[in-house]
Image 1 (cartoon, rainbow, N blue to C red):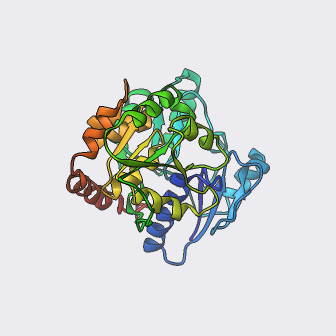
Image 2: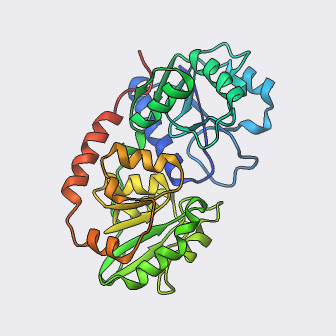
Image 3: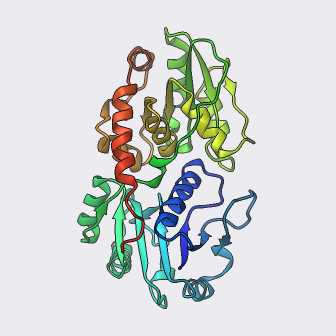
Length: 327
């Protein structure tokens, strides 16, 4: 079977790349001889070496893109991707595609809603062979805005397992990993980390090298920080996360990887997907949409959260092992 997977790949983004890795594993369980090609959007030049066959879709143009996809047996959209209700990034699905396609474990973003876009998306999703979303809150948005029913299946990245990296530290290990969407928290985090009573070492690492995360991490941490190298593999970055005592982040998958390894993550309000995840996991006390201070950090570090988080992780892993492709 020839399978095309479409998403935000090749950008060296930790969450998307690890999600893709686990998606491919699940597909290969079903179809060991599957011929899989990855199509990436929003990428004009490939800067990184990847372990899969990658096509830069933006170079093709819509007509050639459709013609290329029609040579496959199945097209999969998603694996951590988003359906934006204010913009249609799936115009290549509107007409001319002759092969079945599915939306797999996607999120819904309703920060901007456009009625013409909703009509286009509804038509596209109605024709899909299958649609699954990653949380029950995404399903509510799909029902409310698009009038479609869909299953809920956690992202494949829940199955990813990292080996903790032996980082030298004085006291507790705290990881800070930020992006632009949580800029209002930069100064708050820096002040909170300065005032914490717990003995600790603060680390930073960027989850996507081509973004400005490095700059945001510096703004969010006191001067006495350990800046972990940007040039290491995504697997090594995941191992950094797995070695922490707490992760403070506005990045969805940095927090998810931490939680999946039994490590508490303070998740800062950035985009809806972050809050959806924490509500889905019943971890609302770790979600910050107001003020973050030293008391919050000290309190979490004083508690043994591992048993609860590992229980949540075990449940999510079981759910996320569901087949990508319906038989």
